[in-house]
Image (cartoon, rainbow, N blue to C red; front, side):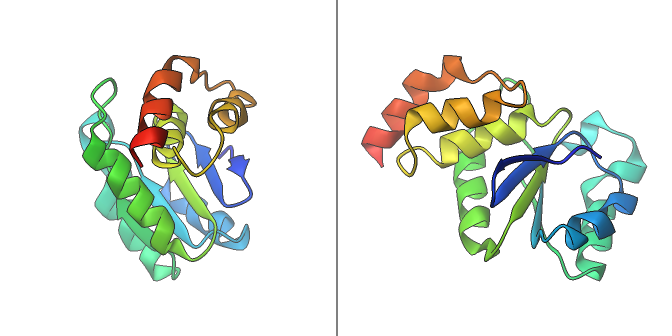
Length: 142
């Protein structure tokens, strides 16, 4: 597992296994968000499996599947709502961490400068420059 801390309170990674959850708890995360649709992965990685293991450790869990290239405003709003109620550091995962970075940046629009929303994920190779117009529009709308 490769934890990529976008901010002190939000990190992303590629797909995890249930066996990774104790390390996430030990690292101080209080919530896990699954941004990967079950249809992309084997049954041992399905959201329900990870959720059961997370909750057994006392971690909050949210399934917010983001379909690559078809993210919706509902995805963005669900990510924002989950982050707001987490009460501590959030760990989100998908196939590579990119979708979890994109949905975070859009959910944070208006709360952070556009440069941060693009620049922080870029430290880990997530290129969000193409989202600048969307982030700016969401910032103005919010």
